Image 1 (tube, rainbow, N blue to C red):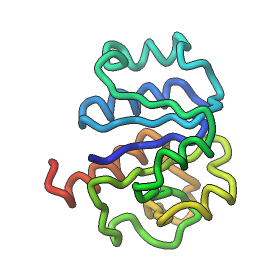
Image 2: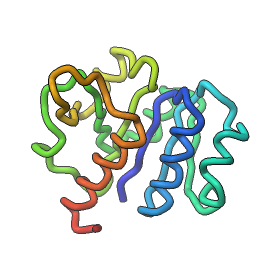
Image 3: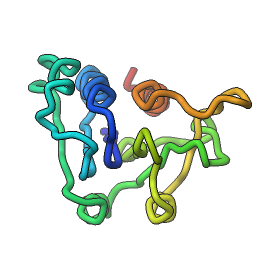
Amino acid sequence: MFNIALYQPDIPQNTAAIIRLCSCFNTTLEIIEPCGFYLNDKRLKRVAMDYLNKSKIITHISYEKFLINKKDSRIILMTTKAKKNYTNFQFKRKDTLLFGRESEGVPKKVHNNSFQRLRIPLKKNARSLNIGMAVAIALTEALRQNSNL
């Protein structure tokens, strides 16, 4: 099934909300370290609640280790810098949807190593969505396309 990957997340509450989302949709969450917080942070635990123990979470100590584990998977980078809309893309069941840091996005090497870069269209003057919202939008479209909703 689909995996969600977070590249060096900054905000524990956002990561916790994504943990809950992934748990509710039976989706694996992959966290690429280093994070801007410790994974045992009380803010993360408070928002994730009991979903933390019900979720499948994989941590990668670096982006390079993540890539090694993803050699048989398409990495789909969700970014505001993409030209192609997420609704104009056919998701496949083994895709990994990758999301960047809340503060900085991802470096150029991550853009270059992605199978596809997609965006969620926003009104002209809007910068970006909260990462949890973006994950929910992209994941539900991928699930819908593959008849998992």
